[in-house]
Length: 85
Image 1 (cartoon, rainbow, N blue to C red):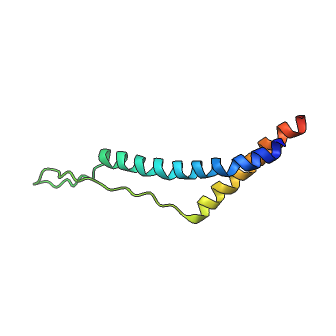
Image 2 (cartoon, helix red, strand yellow):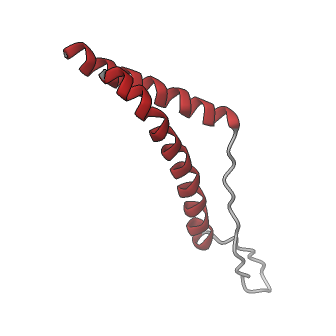
Image 3 (cartoon, helix red, strand yellow):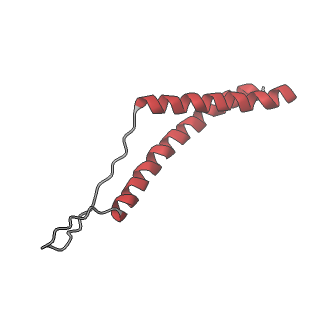
C-alpha cells in the first residue's frame, strides 16, 4: 500500500519539480542578466553599458534524466517504509 501510494504521488512531484526548475532557471537568468554587463574598454571612449541577455537551454535528454532520477527516488523511498510495515 505504501509503495503504491509513493508511485501514485511520484508523478505529481516530478511534474512540480520540472516546472519549478524551468521557472527558477528563467527567473535566475533574468536576475543575473541585470548584474552582468559586458564592458567595452577603449582608450578614447568611456565604457558602454549594455544589458546582457542570458537564456537557459533545456534539452529533452536532461529532462528525461530528471524524470528517471525522480522515479528511482520515489520507488526507493516507497520501498523502505513498505518493507518496514
